[in-house]
Length: 188
Image (cartoon, rainbow, N blue to C red; front, top):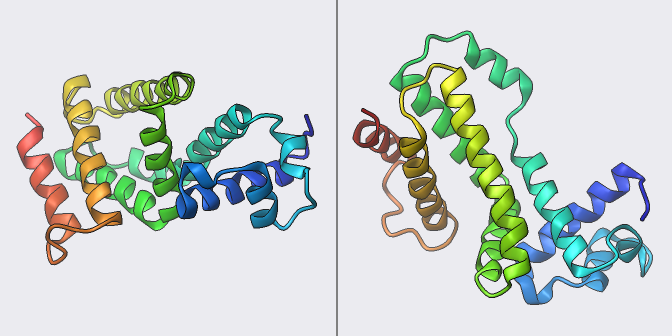
């Protein structure tokens, strides 16, 4: 397996674009080679199998959606409150909607995981690790809400994102207003 990390990220990003545009059936090594504009066979040098490619895409999704250390540091200086929690949620939704291909690719992988147990195992482990990290972060930051509330926010944000990125039921409603209502309704 090749270890040129910038090239590996380039190929993974191309894979995410293919997955977002074509769906999981369109995700092939050849399609990723074409999207990345690399010689035929390059993707398979970095990701030997479809499973390895998907694992690489899951890792890249995490990298691309992660908040910056500077952003986390800036917010760490603010007194914990419901408003700060809402600000974190708004930032998550902003990152997920700004990087549309990544979020659509993630939804594609989640749908495919319903049919492929091996993908469900990889994606499920990644999701649970992210969820546990969210709960730990919330606790360390002294923000309101515990494991149950964080789970409820995950469920709500997934639905909100699906709505925003597909066919919105109420396109006139402000996303910030939705988040404020969620925080008011879900936090003790």
